[in-house]
Image (cartoon, rainbow, N blue to C red; front, side, top):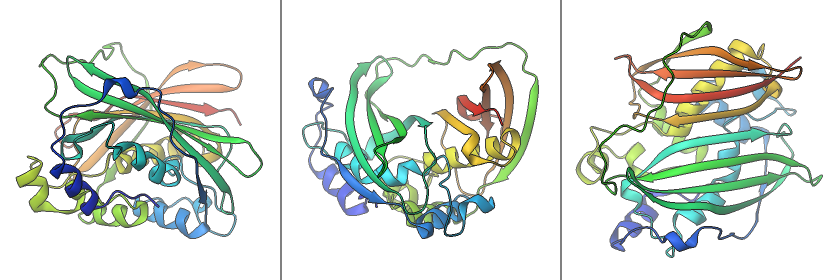
Length: 296
Protein backbone atom coordinates (compact mmCIF):
# COMPACT_ATOMS: atom_id res chain seq x y z
CA UNK A 1 0.00 0.00 0.00
CA UNK A 2 1.09 3.63 -0.44
CA UNK A 3 3.37 5.14 2.16
CA UNK A 4 1.98 8.67 2.07
CA UNK A 5 1.39 9.32 5.76
CA UNK A 6 1.07 12.44 7.90
CA UNK A 7 4.38 11.62 9.58
CA UNK A 8 6.28 11.45 6.28
CA UNK A 9 4.73 14.71 5.08
CA UNK A 10 5.64 16.50 8.32
CA UNK A 11 9.21 15.13 8.13
CA UNK A 12 9.42 16.40 4.56
CA UNK A 13 8.35 19.90 5.63
CA UNK A 14 11.10 20.06 8.26
CA UNK A 15 13.77 19.52 5.59
CA UNK A 16 13.41 23.10 4.22
CA UNK A 17 13.20 22.28 0.51
CA UNK A 18 15.10 24.59 -1.84
CA UNK A 19 13.38 23.67 -5.11
CA UNK A 20 13.27 20.70 -7.43
CA UNK A 21 16.45 19.12 -8.72
CA UNK A 22 16.00 19.62 -12.46
CA UNK A 23 18.92 17.29 -13.20
CA UNK A 24 17.14 14.26 -11.77
CA UNK A 25 14.97 13.68 -14.85
CA UNK A 26 15.35 10.10 -16.09
CA UNK A 27 16.09 8.54 -12.71
CA UNK A 28 14.70 4.99 -12.41
CA UNK A 29 13.61 3.60 -9.05
CA UNK A 30 13.75 -0.04 -7.87
CA UNK A 31 10.89 -2.30 -8.92
CA UNK A 32 8.39 -3.39 -6.29
CA UNK A 33 5.83 -6.18 -6.13
CA UNK A 34 2.12 -5.70 -5.49
CA UNK A 35 -0.38 -8.55 -5.05
CA UNK A 36 -3.89 -7.60 -6.14
CA UNK A 37 -6.65 -8.91 -3.87
CA UNK A 38 -10.41 -8.97 -4.34
CA UNK A 39 -10.73 -7.16 -1.01
CA UNK A 40 -8.45 -4.31 -2.08
CA UNK A 41 -10.43 -3.85 -5.30
CA UNK A 42 -13.79 -3.94 -3.49
CA UNK A 43 -12.64 -1.47 -0.81
CA UNK A 44 -11.33 0.96 -3.43
CA UNK A 45 -14.56 0.70 -5.41
CA UNK A 46 -16.64 1.33 -2.31
CA UNK A 47 -14.47 4.31 -1.32
CA UNK A 48 -15.15 5.92 -4.71
CA UNK A 49 -18.91 5.24 -4.64
CA UNK A 50 -18.73 2.55 -7.32
CA UNK A 51 -21.70 0.20 -7.65
CA UNK A 52 -20.48 -1.82 -10.66
CA UNK A 53 -20.66 -5.56 -9.91
CA UNK A 54 -17.48 -6.13 -11.95
CA UNK A 55 -15.50 -4.73 -9.01
CA UNK A 56 -16.66 -7.27 -6.41
CA UNK A 57 -16.17 -11.00 -5.99
CA UNK A 58 -13.31 -13.43 -6.33
CA UNK A 59 -12.96 -12.71 -10.06
CA UNK A 60 -13.16 -8.92 -9.69
CA UNK A 61 -11.45 -6.60 -12.16
CA UNK A 62 -9.93 -3.34 -10.97
CA UNK A 63 -11.43 0.10 -11.71
CA UNK A 64 -9.54 2.38 -14.09
CA UNK A 65 -8.11 4.49 -11.24
CA UNK A 66 -6.96 1.47 -9.20
CA UNK A 67 -3.44 1.30 -10.74
CA UNK A 68 -2.61 4.28 -8.51
CA UNK A 69 -3.11 1.98 -5.51
CA UNK A 70 -0.85 -0.73 -6.91
CA UNK A 71 1.73 1.86 -7.91
CA UNK A 72 1.45 4.24 -4.99
CA UNK A 73 4.31 2.88 -2.86
CA UNK A 74 6.63 3.15 -5.85
CA UNK A 75 5.36 6.65 -6.68
CA UNK A 76 5.81 7.67 -3.04
CA UNK A 77 9.49 6.66 -3.28
CA UNK A 78 9.84 9.28 -6.01
CA UNK A 79 7.90 11.97 -4.16
CA UNK A 80 9.90 11.51 -0.96
CA UNK A 81 13.25 11.23 -2.74
CA UNK A 82 15.49 13.69 -0.89
CA UNK A 83 17.48 14.24 -4.08
CA UNK A 84 14.32 15.46 -5.87
CA UNK A 85 13.58 18.10 -3.23
CA UNK A 86 9.78 18.23 -3.56
CA UNK A 87 7.95 20.32 -0.95
CA UNK A 88 5.00 18.05 -0.24
CA UNK A 89 3.12 20.70 1.73
CA UNK A 90 2.83 22.71 -1.49
CA UNK A 91 2.39 19.76 -3.85
CA UNK A 92 -0.83 19.27 -5.79
CA UNK A 93 -1.79 16.71 -8.39
CA UNK A 94 -1.76 18.38 -11.82
CA UNK A 95 -2.54 15.64 -14.33
CA UNK A 96 -3.08 11.89 -14.38
CA UNK A 97 -3.03 9.56 -17.39
CA UNK A 98 -3.79 5.83 -17.23
CA UNK A 99 -3.32 3.58 -20.26
CA UNK A 100 -4.90 0.21 -19.59
CA UNK A 101 -3.54 -2.59 -21.78
CA UNK A 102 -4.77 -5.64 -19.86
CA UNK A 103 -7.44 -5.82 -17.13
CA UNK A 104 -5.94 -5.98 -13.66
CA UNK A 105 -7.65 -8.80 -11.80
CA UNK A 106 -7.84 -10.18 -8.28
CA UNK A 107 -4.96 -12.62 -7.89
CA UNK A 108 -2.57 -10.75 -10.17
CA UNK A 109 0.95 -10.15 -8.89
CA UNK A 110 2.28 -6.95 -10.42
CA UNK A 111 5.84 -5.80 -10.87
CA UNK A 112 5.71 -2.03 -10.38
CA UNK A 113 8.47 0.34 -11.46
CA UNK A 114 8.54 4.12 -11.45
CA UNK A 115 10.84 6.64 -13.07
CA UNK A 116 11.07 10.42 -13.30
CA UNK A 117 10.12 11.13 -16.89
CA UNK A 118 10.52 14.89 -16.42
CA UNK A 119 11.45 17.54 -13.87
CA UNK A 120 10.73 21.05 -15.13
CA UNK A 121 10.64 24.72 -14.15
CA UNK A 122 7.90 26.49 -16.11
CA UNK A 123 6.46 29.99 -15.84
CA UNK A 124 3.53 28.47 -14.00
CA UNK A 125 5.82 26.69 -11.52
CA UNK A 126 7.83 23.55 -10.81
CA UNK A 127 6.49 20.23 -12.02
CA UNK A 128 7.66 16.65 -12.11
CA UNK A 129 6.12 13.67 -13.88
CA UNK A 130 6.33 10.09 -12.64
CA UNK A 131 5.93 7.25 -15.14
CA UNK A 132 4.91 3.96 -13.53
CA UNK A 133 4.63 0.64 -15.35
CA UNK A 134 2.65 -2.29 -13.96
CA UNK A 135 3.52 -5.70 -15.42
CA UNK A 136 1.61 -8.81 -14.40
CA UNK A 137 2.84 -12.30 -13.53
CA UNK A 138 2.61 -13.35 -17.18
CA UNK A 139 5.12 -10.61 -18.10
CA UNK A 140 2.33 -8.65 -19.80
CA UNK A 141 2.30 -4.87 -19.42
CA UNK A 142 -1.08 -4.27 -17.74
CA UNK A 143 -1.00 -0.50 -17.32
CA UNK A 144 1.09 2.64 -17.58
CA UNK A 145 0.47 5.54 -15.23
CA UNK A 146 1.72 9.09 -15.75
CA UNK A 147 1.33 11.38 -12.74
CA UNK A 148 2.21 15.06 -13.09
CA UNK A 149 2.76 16.90 -9.81
CA UNK A 150 2.83 20.68 -9.39
CA UNK A 151 4.51 22.65 -6.60
CA UNK A 152 2.31 25.61 -5.61
CA UNK A 153 3.94 28.99 -5.22
CA UNK A 154 6.95 28.31 -7.47
CA UNK A 155 5.79 30.12 -10.62
CA UNK A 156 6.29 33.65 -11.88
CA UNK A 157 3.34 33.85 -14.29
CA UNK A 158 -0.29 34.43 -13.37
CA UNK A 159 -1.58 33.83 -16.88
CA UNK A 160 -3.94 30.94 -17.44
CA UNK A 161 -2.46 28.02 -19.37
CA UNK A 162 -5.86 26.76 -20.48
CA UNK A 163 -6.20 26.15 -24.20
CA UNK A 164 -9.68 24.68 -24.13
CA UNK A 165 -11.51 24.67 -27.44
CA UNK A 166 -14.67 26.75 -27.59
CA UNK A 167 -16.18 24.65 -30.38
CA UNK A 168 -19.67 23.24 -29.94
CA UNK A 169 -19.84 19.88 -28.22
CA UNK A 170 -22.54 17.32 -28.84
CA UNK A 171 -22.99 15.87 -25.38
CA UNK A 172 -23.62 12.12 -25.45
CA UNK A 173 -23.75 11.54 -21.70
CA UNK A 174 -24.18 13.64 -18.57
CA UNK A 175 -24.32 12.64 -14.93
CA UNK A 176 -24.41 14.16 -11.45
CA UNK A 177 -22.35 12.67 -8.59
CA UNK A 178 -22.31 13.63 -4.92
CA UNK A 179 -19.05 13.77 -2.97
CA UNK A 180 -19.83 12.46 0.50
CA UNK A 181 -18.89 14.39 3.62
CA UNK A 182 -16.61 11.52 4.73
CA UNK A 183 -15.25 10.81 1.24
CA UNK A 184 -11.65 11.79 1.92
CA UNK A 185 -11.41 9.62 5.03
CA UNK A 186 -12.83 6.58 3.26
CA UNK A 187 -10.60 7.14 0.26
CA UNK A 188 -7.52 7.56 2.47
CA UNK A 189 -8.18 4.20 4.11
CA UNK A 190 -8.79 2.34 0.85
CA UNK A 191 -5.90 3.93 -1.06
CA UNK A 192 -3.40 4.41 1.74
CA UNK A 193 -2.95 8.08 0.80
CA UNK A 194 -3.22 9.83 4.17
CA UNK A 195 -1.69 13.14 3.15
CA UNK A 196 -2.97 15.56 5.84
CA UNK A 197 -4.34 18.02 3.28
CA UNK A 198 -7.09 15.41 2.75
CA UNK A 199 -7.78 14.31 6.33
CA UNK A 200 -6.53 16.99 8.75
CA UNK A 201 -8.61 20.20 8.60
CA UNK A 202 -6.20 22.18 10.80
CA UNK A 203 -3.20 21.23 8.67
CA UNK A 204 -5.08 21.95 5.44
CA UNK A 205 -6.03 25.47 6.53
CA UNK A 206 -3.18 26.62 8.75
CA UNK A 207 -0.17 24.88 7.19
CA UNK A 208 -1.17 24.37 3.56
CA UNK A 209 -3.22 27.56 3.16
CA UNK A 210 -6.29 25.77 1.80
CA UNK A 211 -9.93 26.62 2.58
CA UNK A 212 -10.33 23.18 4.14
CA UNK A 213 -9.52 19.56 3.46
CA UNK A 214 -9.68 18.76 -0.23
CA UNK A 215 -10.70 15.58 -2.01
CA UNK A 216 -7.90 13.45 -3.42
CA UNK A 217 -7.43 14.14 -7.11
CA UNK A 218 -7.48 10.41 -7.76
CA UNK A 219 -10.87 10.13 -6.08
CA UNK A 220 -12.18 12.82 -8.44
CA UNK A 221 -10.67 10.89 -11.36
CA UNK A 222 -12.37 7.71 -10.11
CA UNK A 223 -15.70 9.56 -10.16
CA UNK A 224 -15.01 10.60 -13.77
CA UNK A 225 -14.02 7.07 -14.81
CA UNK A 226 -17.27 5.77 -13.34
CA UNK A 227 -19.13 8.28 -15.51
CA UNK A 228 -17.26 7.06 -18.59
CA UNK A 229 -17.76 3.35 -17.87
CA UNK A 230 -21.44 3.77 -16.98
CA UNK A 231 -22.19 6.21 -19.78
CA UNK A 232 -20.26 5.09 -22.87
CA UNK A 233 -18.72 1.69 -22.04
CA UNK A 234 -22.02 -0.05 -21.42
CA UNK A 235 -20.92 -0.73 -17.86
CA UNK A 236 -17.95 -2.85 -19.00
CA UNK A 237 -14.74 -1.51 -17.39
CA UNK A 238 -12.58 -3.69 -19.68
CA UNK A 239 -13.59 -1.48 -22.62
CA UNK A 240 -11.89 1.60 -21.13
CA UNK A 241 -8.42 1.67 -22.70
CA UNK A 242 -7.26 5.09 -21.53
CA UNK A 243 -8.37 7.89 -19.25
CA UNK A 244 -6.51 11.17 -18.84
CA UNK A 245 -7.46 14.16 -16.70
CA UNK A 246 -6.15 17.61 -15.83
CA UNK A 247 -7.06 18.68 -12.31
CA UNK A 248 -7.94 22.37 -12.54
CA UNK A 249 -9.65 23.20 -9.22
CA UNK A 250 -9.82 21.50 -5.83
CA UNK A 251 -12.91 19.50 -4.90
CA UNK A 252 -14.35 19.70 -1.39
CA UNK A 253 -16.38 17.17 0.60
CA UNK A 254 -20.12 17.65 0.20
CA UNK A 255 -19.95 19.11 -3.30
CA UNK A 256 -21.98 17.84 -6.24
CA UNK A 257 -20.05 17.24 -9.46
CA UNK A 258 -21.44 17.26 -13.00
CA UNK A 259 -19.63 15.36 -15.77
CA UNK A 260 -20.34 15.80 -19.48
CA UNK A 261 -19.00 13.52 -22.23
CA UNK A 262 -18.72 14.06 -26.00
CA UNK A 263 -17.19 12.25 -28.98
CA UNK A 264 -13.97 13.66 -30.46
CA UNK A 265 -12.95 10.87 -32.85
CA UNK A 266 -13.63 7.32 -34.01
CA UNK A 267 -11.75 4.43 -35.59
CA UNK A 268 -12.70 0.82 -36.21
CA UNK A 269 -11.54 -0.26 -32.76
CA UNK A 270 -11.49 2.88 -30.57
CA UNK A 271 -13.81 5.80 -29.91
CA UNK A 272 -12.16 8.78 -28.26
CA UNK A 273 -14.26 10.95 -25.97
CA UNK A 274 -13.65 14.30 -24.36
CA UNK A 275 -15.12 15.12 -20.97
CA UNK A 276 -15.07 17.66 -18.19
CA UNK A 277 -16.32 17.75 -14.62
CA UNK A 278 -17.80 20.90 -13.05
CA UNK A 279 -18.31 21.91 -9.43
CA UNK A 280 -21.61 23.40 -8.17
CA UNK A 281 -20.52 26.87 -9.38
CA UNK A 282 -20.08 25.57 -12.92
CA UNK A 283 -16.29 25.80 -12.69
CA UNK A 284 -14.30 22.87 -14.14
CA UNK A 285 -12.48 20.73 -11.59
CA UNK A 286 -11.37 18.41 -14.41
CA UNK A 287 -10.43 19.91 -17.75
CA UNK A 288 -9.20 18.35 -20.99
CA UNK A 289 -10.47 14.90 -20.05
CA UNK A 290 -9.76 12.18 -22.61
CA UNK A 291 -11.15 8.65 -22.64
CA UNK A 292 -10.37 6.00 -25.25
CA UNK A 293 -13.03 3.26 -25.38
CA UNK A 294 -12.69 -0.06 -27.18
CA UNK A 295 -15.44 -1.22 -29.50
CA UNK A 296 -17.55 -4.14 -28.34
